[in-house]
Image (cartoon, rainbow, N blue to C red; front, side):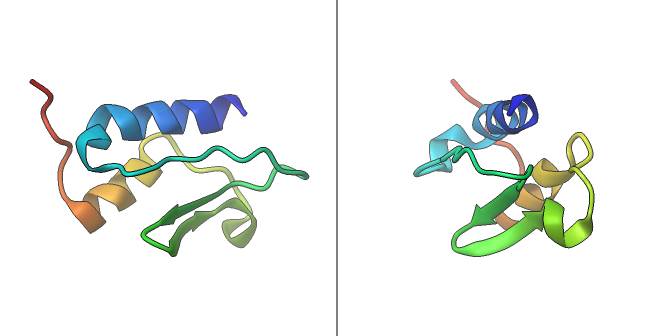
Length: 71
């Protein structure tokens, strides 16, 4: 759970103005998946490993653009 919370913080810090919703859903067996606009963009089970720091943010950046500056 700490990794998921850290990722949520990273995403909200960079893209809060364009994030409509962000859900952390506790699961079993260490499942960790990230879905963006209905598309699975990261799956721990699919890759057989945890996301590296900044890896998911990099994928989000490729899909929706750079982080948004807050006022």
